[in-house]
Image 1 (cartoon, rainbow, N blue to C red):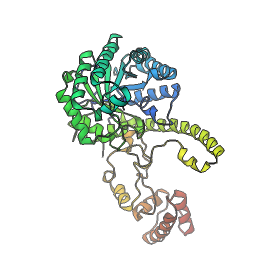
Image 2: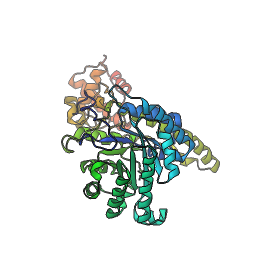
Image 3: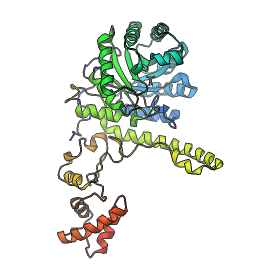
Length: 449
Ligand code: KIV
């Protein structure tokens, strides 16, 4: 069972834009406000973005990708406000997050991104261009040489504006030809890029493949030792967390993630999963890796995102109900109830610390480490005194007896047996047996508290 006490096991190393100051430190780049916002129905207002950015700073993320300033006037204003406020709120340890703005590889986007982020103490421009054959042929209609030329010139241009921290992403790197990747990455390093982000844009790679991609880039790209390698894994095959960890194992020292894993299509690697995996297993199987995240803020941050998205989902839902009612298609409304984290979501799902089967409940009542690897308090979840035990049809006598005692009913074995079988038949009818159901069962008998 993990240790809930010290939130940061090691001190965050000194911030240097273009150098790894501690080889085991993994920087957490949160893109909830940019890639996360690309989830259908998750558009955020400037005020919501600012609130989330403040919460992300409490969590201690190293980089906040606040948006895509050239995409809209609203996004520009949101990124600028975050840069001016959150990007200047240095804490007592000297921590302040890098504020980053996304841009395509063109001068207008890059200038706009710089205009928005330059107010931060640590501003970053993140520029990208696609490198896979399919994107070059159908989307960009450009040759590889042309794409190299654009990338090199645009990274130089970003640096020429006075930005010392420039991240470059070869979009769809997961499907790009290796030799071409080494070449373009080597060129942007020479042009002044400080972080090279490797996106598996369509989430197609398997963990071993993605790990090998990072290892190959590390071994074959000229000048790579002077920059930080980053991962950006989409979740189309449900492998984004595994791929991110595999990338970190192979040498990436920045991970791009979102709260609750929200993002385009099936989403991104989720911050809470990646961070907790590094915290739980960093020492044992990841060669001593660690992050600077204060994990006690994880649950609060996750709930905040859910709440905001649900609120947005509801207004979307109302519009859709109106539309569907007009079209006579009301039965489809269930498809449009917005987004919520699924109950079995790792770390932050409602069931992540709930135990239903009798065998597990018995184990939990004897020692919490039998079926839990994380202390709920460590992620900011207050444990009720029921050890996460959910009474249902699979529950055993031990759990029922324990709940009865908590409710103030002390029964002998014969009384417990009588209640137990009646409890089972209630549980077969209902999904969950509540305290009120148990009190009703006991009150039907002669047992009184
Ligand atoms: O998925 C992707 O390729 C991206 C890049 C812009 C990093 O979001």
